[in-house]
Length: 335
Image 1 (cartoon, rainbow, N blue to C red):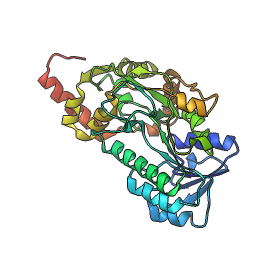
Image 2: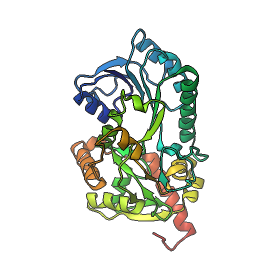
Image 3: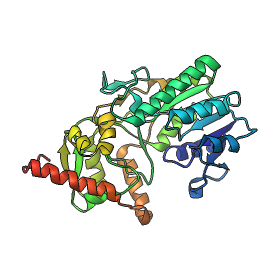
Image 4: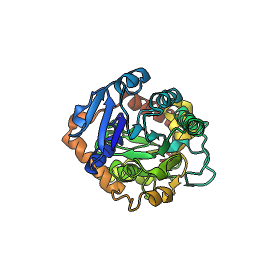
């Protein structure tokens, strides 16, 4: 089976590449080739900007695929171009959407794939929804063979999943330094963190699966944690108790709309994903990496790659600014 990954070296796609190769699937990456160290042996790479439809068209000219996975689709225009490029040349097209597409506020904390879509708070989520709608239309009108996958908060070695950022070391360093970190709301909403190696088990089972055609799936762990518990677990792995300051989500968004959008649009809500659908289609799917194990593995990776412990100065500055304003308005700490 020949499968094209548009992208392939990212947080989730790299784990899926490795597992697919183990299962004997031929994997081709289409990307700019900027991260050869993340490309496993046995992968063929087509050079091109996966976010640029004209470069994608040139790179795949004359080729047919059993499956194409769009890891880098962030706008409806990209998906529309893919429908045109791959229509008639692919057995299955998998679009990586997002669990943020589910309706906010949530009508019920337990989320299934039939939960309505809609997110007035976050443009990223709305673009994912619009892309899904394009695929549904292409399937109905042109027979385009789509499958949608909606990951939630997924991480791997070299990723520190927090409520503010993933790829930098800003929040962990503040904890190590004994400085305050911001927690949205009261820190008691439930959240789900899925290790990429576990996500891959469900995802690879969808590739070439006839029962996945015209269907949407989320793939997450069944482990739920409050944000306070999540950050306390991170602190325990670092050997320092985090100094958490709880600030209302709306206040954070008013101070910094960019930082506030994913908070208002997703992270402030309790979300527990019902994974019955993916378990029915991929027998034996289960998640084995709990967050305590996963975060310790990721921190060990950072210790082995100290140059990767980058501080995002923009986030650092905004943390300091928001905390200063909050403490000025409320001199008695509510942490």
